[in-house]
Image (cartoon, rainbow, N blue to C red; front, side, top):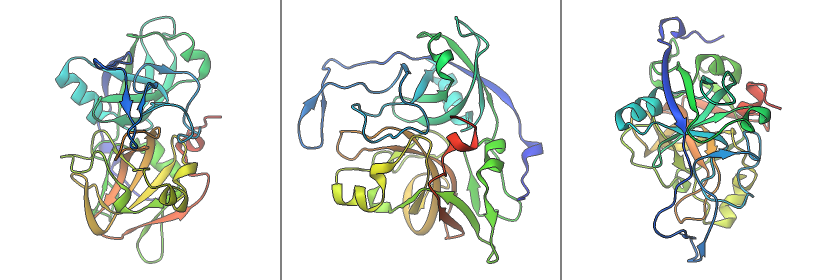
Length: 288
C-alpha cells in the first residue's frame, strides 16, 4: 500500500445549508446551437439522479446529483468549498432528516456548491435550508516518494479504496473509465486554484463525445485528463496528467459539459490510467 501523511492531517468541521435552485431575470438558458430552453439546473435536492447514474442523457443543465449545499457568508462558503473533500462524511444536523449521514461527491464552481450523497429515504425527509455538517479531511494529503504529484479534494479513506498502485517504472496506476484530451476541457480552465470547484468536459462535438466515451459517463466516474495541469490552477501543459471525478451533468451551454473535480495532478506523465468500467466512487463507497 502507498504510504501517505494521513496521520498528520486535520479533521475539521465545515457547514452549509441546502441551497434552493435559483434563476435570473430570464428563465431561459441558450443552447450551443442558439435554442432558448427552460430546464432544471443547479441546487436543491435532486431525487432521481445520484452517483452511479448516467450524467449525459437527462433533461437538464449542470444538474447536481443528490443534495447541493452552500453557506451564504462568502468567507465561510469559501472554506466549505476548499476544505471539503470527495468522500468526506456529511451529517444532517437540522430538520426531519436530522442524524442522516452521507458523503461529499464533489464541488461545483461558479454557483459554489458542495454536492452530497444521501440514501433515498433520507432525501425524502430533507428540505431547503436544512443544515449539513461535513468532517473536512484530506487537503494536504501527500504520497510518500511522490512529491511531484499533488493530491487534492480527496478523503484519505477514499484514496485508499480507489486501488492506486505503483508499477515497476515508479509510476502510479489509477483506475479510470476513460481518458479526455486537453482540447475538450472548457469552462473553468484558467481558474486560480484546483482545490475548489470543477471544470467542464465540452460536449459540442458529437464525434468526439462518442470517440472518447463521454456519452457514457456517469456521476462519480473517475477520468484521466491528458496534458492537463491542475497542480495550482487549471491549464494546458504537454505531458501533464490530472485524475478527476465527474460531479455534475452534461450542459446545453457552449463550452460546457459534465464537470470534473480534480483529485490528483502531476506536471509529468507519472500517473497512468488503467481503464475499467468500475472506476466510480459509488462502487468504492458502497452505494447501490
